[in-house]
Image (cartoon, rainbow, N blue to C red; front, side, top):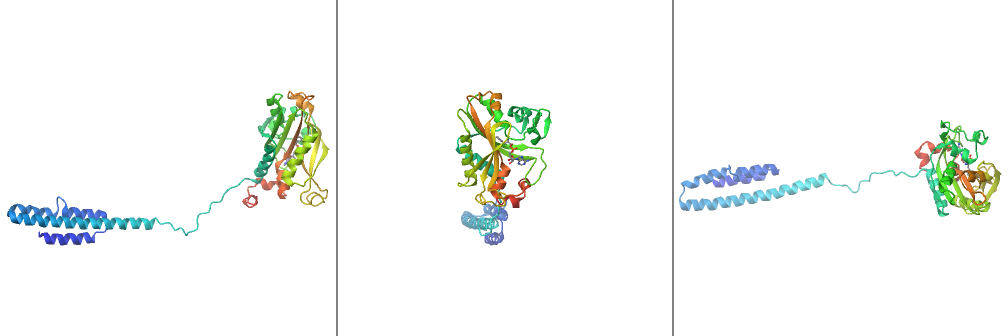
Length: 338
Ligand code: FA5
């Protein structure tokens, strides 16, 4: 075959290919070991020296030209490939982004943390106790022996005769007293509590409380009052007043029910405070000498105060929620409001 024709054929083939794979095939057809060029080269042996020289020059020119064209074509195909890839992977920055809905803390957790922060600011430590509790700590050592009428107000779910779901966070008082072995105490204890109460708009069989306990020398009722005033002003507003009414809890003496001046009507009387100007918030009192004694503290040397509040009740008052069951239904329309 004539070298000129071979060159024309090669140029046409290179022009027509549209992939790197095909271009490699063309390369081997026109330049490779079994290419048509080899046939031309085979003819060399029958030529004179001058003719060999001339053909040699022609072959080199052919090779250079075809190699250059192949390289150029390769570069072109590579670029096309990159452009195609870029186009297929292009990101349209003008498209609206995907929305991720962000979770947040449950209103009960928010209020619990708010109360914890207030107490931590006053130097309290957070203690915890088990929800499955011994009758001994939930009742006996809180001065509520078997048969005591106060047990009736706190019926609960029993695991066995001596083990139950705790009815309040007060057993953590006993556990902390026993562990501290006579040392001063300043703790709060948040946690879940259980009672065999019928579920209605203000009661639930499972709810949460926060307990507070301070035991040291020279602790008086005025320490309790100062602490309660600070807590309730932080929670419900700087201008709130508090009121203590005598009440009964077997593990404190004296015991009090604590009211805060109504934060809706400022004490004038409204539907929230049922016209009284006051809202009942929590129970408290001075730790009963028998409770101190049972846990190894001498009540002649040590005194203390304790307080306990329902987190649901405080959250309901704070946000004007009228049904406790809303907290537990996981309705996003309710939860999103906090
Ligand atoms: C007690 O549980 C005492 N341990 C509180 C206490 C601690 C008094 C330390 C003195 C010293 P009481 O039974 O009143 O007290 O409950 C406290 C709060 O728990 C109530 O004010 C109420 O907010 C909440 N609570 C009680 N039962 C339920 C219930 N079934 N559902 C929702 N909240 C409840």
